[in-house]
Image 1 (tube, one colour):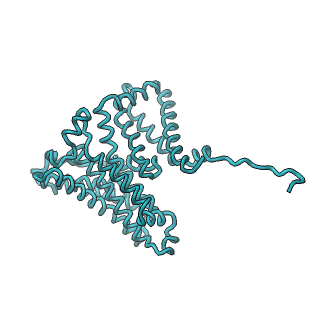
Image 2 (cartoon, rainbow, N blue to C red):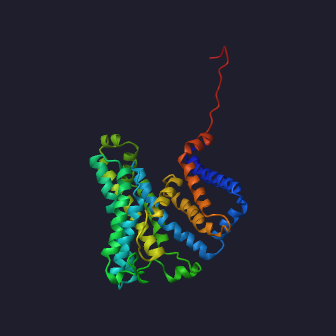
Image 3 (cartoon, rainbow, N blue to C red):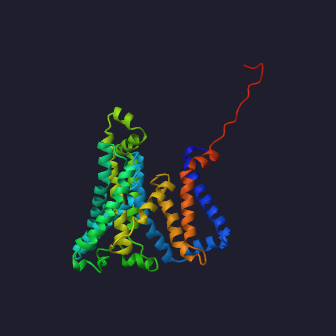
Amino acid sequence: MSKKVQNWAVPLIAVLLGMLIGAVLMLIFGYDPFWAYYDLFTTAFGSLKNIGEILRAMSPLILIALGFSVASKAGFFNVGLPGQALAGWVSAVWFALSFPDLPKVISVICTVIIGLVAGGIAGAIPGILRAYLGTSEVIVTIMMNYIILYVANNIIRFGFTADMLRSSEASNKVVASASYQTEYLSQITGGSRFNIGFFLALAAAFLVWFLLKKTTTGFEITSVGLNPHASEYAGMSSKRVIIMSMIISGALCGLGGTVEGLGTFQNVFVQNASLAIGWNGMAVALLASNSPIGIPFAALLYGVLSIGKSGMIGVPPEIIDVVSALIIFFVGANYIIRYWVRPRRKSVKAKGGQN
């Protein structure tokens, strides 16, 4: 089996193993796994509205997963996805509430740019610290999540003007011209929250693929990720590449948060913990082996699980969370799967008396 086929086979096998063990757990707790999975998939694809909701749920996950992928290609394990997404979310909603009279096209363009910039700044900080001070990106990005979370909450409480707030914990909804939802997209998907964020996510997936595969910048990112010392010897600046990749990574996460804020909720509110879409986006990237082409398909699976689990009558939705965790476990332990799917070489024994 070729390496390319293995790269596709490992995530698929991980999904099947996760669902299989999930079925065993259902049996142990007295649930029928066949009907549970049947209800899950029929609910997910049983109506235009639910299909629209799947596409809506995919959008921020694709963008955040792409952000994680770019950083990973540069050898940077970006755990700050939730914070970077929240930075984009709060900044974009603040702008939309501050300038409600802008035409829709102008408002969307401005909020996209603001989300990218806010996320890019949040990503640049750990990138600079890693490049010039050699700090651990894992520790710094984890702590950045908390810093951004508490700063964002205080901005909502004390930085938003009174006319922007519905309560002390949440802002008003943005006007229709600032929302990423449109009447047309809602109508064709049965009243779902499907929005233009999905098309932004697909465009970003193509651009990231093109960047990594077809440009000199992408080659530098990959080279530094594989061997920074050899890249330096070849004339590349590993510091510049690390910072640049983290700016791109953070910007994509910031756009993911913007899409979640203006496409799903249409407002911003105080968060009690790091954004779940940040961790789910990381899981999507891991499931797709950081492939920009595979990420939309991995996000589709997560969208189906997220929307479909509401139809599993009588089965705790936490079971599906366990299935999702098991899938990521098997992706993380992919060396076990690769051991079984790798090509076997037949040993040739030399016969006595032969040269």
